[in-house]
Length: 109
Image (tube, rainbow, N blue to C red; front, top):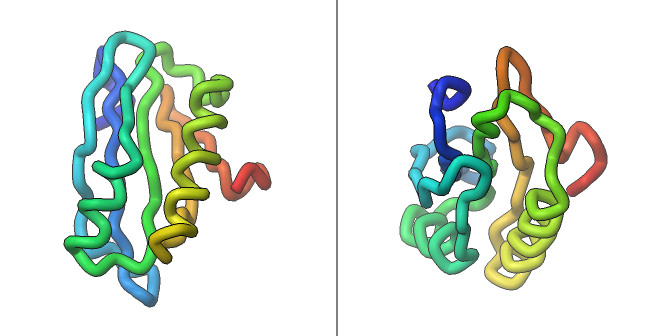
């Protein structure tokens, strides 16, 4: 499970038009506190799978699910990139110790 990892792992869940899961793709693995994500990698995978939407996911090895400024900025960047290619960022989930943070549930998308 993502919550047990020592490094940040960033994955994207690719969704069809009914928001059903097509598949999950690992985009990158980062250091202890950062994963480096390129929008082209996220949306290249989504376009190739004919995805209609995506859910971004990554873990915080510290267990704290509070989003960092980098997390917030990355989410905004990816949401804007998604608009350009017609693929909606449905949510971004941060996985921690026995909990998660949803950008959508917290009105950050």
